[in-house]
Every structure is written in structure tokens, then in C-alpha cells.
Length: 40
Length: 367
Image 1 (cartoon, rainbow over the protein chains, first blue to last red):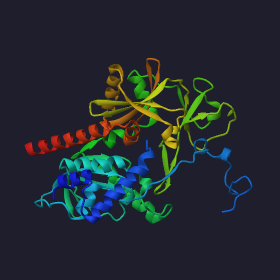
Image 2 (image 1 turned 90 degrees about the vertical axis):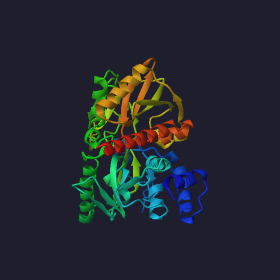
Image 3 (image 1 turned 180 degrees about the horizontal axis):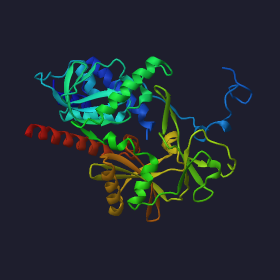
Image 4 (image 1 turned 180 degrees about the vertical axis):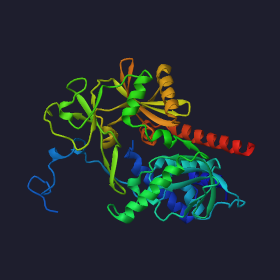
């Protein structure tokens, strides 16, 4: 599969691969927890 | 650990005896070294079509795992079919990496890559996961320091915010350059005696001359935020290291202006206290705004002077005047976007990186 197709799947929330779905869940969780962090 | 009746650890310095900028600063953030890079994940999982064996042009990022701006860039570049590769300070120990010296190539894990554009941000040596105070730890950090500096300044690669210029852009240099470009700056002193150094009057702000986050152990970040210098602090208590003391400038509001290439994207930032940005972000109101061309022209001129392409300026608004506070080269834009409900900086950065990459790719093919 191409990078573009995989990224599009991620954006649409349509990931079927279990390992990548786990990554997507962790990424979403990190996005939430790092919302309050300011590094600069 | 036992504590005395007032809650202090016996033998530990009292709050008043601590450095001024460490007093009452309880901000602590744990930054886990968990890979959150989309492109690294899909390549490691073998989900991406392998190329033809030739070195793959890429954007190379030196950052840390929790740099969410770069994690989002990885997805955005994937959407455009652009390969991004990553070296994170907090995941670099034992990284399979070989860097060619006679060709602009790297082997990262099992991939042969040709970086066209390199961006170093938040690749802090204090995040390298080694045991502090050990010879083996000092060795690994020193090796990574040298190699990371070389990677982020190689002349056969293009760079975002080239380190050879931005590394020396400390807050004091920023102030003198901003003044030279016609921006008003607060009266400022650098001193180990903040109790008796009050530029511009009784009311002053103390701020760090260095980073806003300190990482005494890898992954554990402590905040160092601007704070008012108490008017009662008339003693001669010495600080262990110099701090910046600035006159307090009454203002109507504050601005954060992101420069991305030749664009300025501005947010108005309303807060009650300088440290609220970090310790109480929900109390900070951020709204998209515009700035007059007289200001944006100066900021863009400064960015060109400093040779930075992506940076964030903090300014005070006093009537029709603007007061320069600082510029952040390793800037965070998602924090502001989240509060403003606006993703214009992300979009501008992603577009700028993709366009620059394609320019460099085209230039390489034309040779």
C-alpha cells in the first residue's frame, strides 16, 4: 500500500490492521494528554 | 522519605533558599519515549510498498518522541507521499544508523535514505536515555551531541531553521537584534542579584536566560516560567546563576505571531499571569487575529536576518505599540491552535515543508 493510502485510512479512522489501529489509538490518546503541554 | 512538620525534607534547602525561578514552580511533565511517528510505524510494520532499492529522498527530523508537531507533520507528509524519517533524542540509544560522509545518504534501520531537508527541534541531549553521572552515559551523550550537530548543519543538505544560525539565538541576542530592527523591547538586566537590579522601576519580571523546561533526568521535565519579582525582595540574596530581569510593561494584551516562510499568522493571547500559559492553560484565551503590516514586515525581516523559516514571536500590545519579548525557534503551534480552534499554522507549516521538499527534489533532478 502507498503512504498516501495509509495516511488517508488513518484520517478516515478506517484502519483495519490491528497493530496500526493500536498505534492510532495511542496517537489519539497522546494528542489529548499533550494538549496542555507547552514546550516554548 | 521523612518530612518535618512544615512538610520539608530534612536537609533540603528551604523554598526561599532555592533559585528564584525554581521557587513555587511545581510544573512537571513526564515525556515518555514512546514512538508516535506514523511513518515509522507503517514502515516498521512492512505496510508500505518498498521502493526500487535506490535511496529514497526524505525529510529528516531530529526531535523527541512526544514532539506532537513533528508527529502530525509525519502524517501530513505521508498524505502527500513524502517520506519522513526520524531520529529522536529519547529513542536514539542503540538506533541502527549509519551516515555516509562522502554521499548525502543515511541508512536508518533497514532503509537507505537521502535526506533533502533536515529539521532539528527539541532534540535535547538531556533527553538521551542514559544514567546521569556515569561514564557510559556521558560517552553516549557526547557522541550523539557531535553527530546531531553535524547532521543538523551538513552543507549538502538543506535545513529548516539551520542550527548554525539558530543555536546562538539566545534571548539577549534576540532583544538587541529586535531593537536594531526598530522594535521596542523592555529594559533588561542580566544578574545574579535580582534583589537589587530593577531596570525601569520597582515592578519587574524575572525569566530564564535558558530553556523554559529543564530535564534533570531523561523524560522528566520541570518548568521555569516568568514570574513577577516581588517588590519586597530587597535583599541581596545571590542567585547561583544569572537570570533575566525585565521591566514590567503594562499591556492591553499579548500576541503570538508565527512566521512560516513569508507568512505571519497571529493569535491574541489573554492571560492574567505570565506562567498561566504552562500551569493553567485553560484560563488562557487565544483568538486568531491580524497584525499591521508595519509589524509583520519587521518580524519577517528579523526572521530573514536570523535565517529562520518557522518561528514564533511573543509580543506585548501597548496601545498602538508592540513590545518584543522573545522569539522561539523550537515553537509549539498546536497548543495555540487547540485553544483558538484553528489549524492555520499546521496547514502552513505542512505546505511549506512539502513545497520546500519538492523544490529541492526538482533541483536535484535538474542537476
